[in-house]
Image (tube, rainbow, N blue to C red):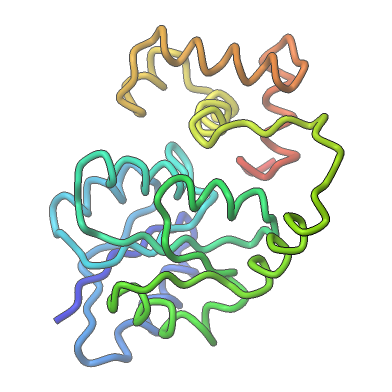
Length: 211
């Protein structure tokens, strides 16, 4: 029996994913999480084969979940679901150890194939984003002025935008307060920002948090 955890902050999405997964007689959903922190806890408790994680979850996004599971040396694979068509996000996902990446709009059609691939030890990435990523590498974009935040910096920005203090963020991400302050300062420097309000607006614009 293959064990799967579903993590998404919308109940209707979790219900839909559960229905697709449990249509297979040898797959079982061992738990549902509404944020990334719960997803990690459920994974530690139930040791699933796969975690299906929404990218834009509260407290800890899907990429941070993958990073945390890698740090804990768990063999659980992470399948990221997202509504956002972004090759930058795909790149960050790969760097975070994610081996499965799927648009939510494609879930009904491709979720089974994605899970099967991960269970077989094969990666599964939505073809549209792979094509865009390849295209961008081929044309070798010259405009590098908008420096990307690292996925850890994005996690810190997301938590700041959700109203967490540096001390709270350090507890959530298992980092020292000094390291959180360093990531915060680095993100603000890269983005050319000088206030928390600007970071919040950036997080909303990049859909790291809901407006």
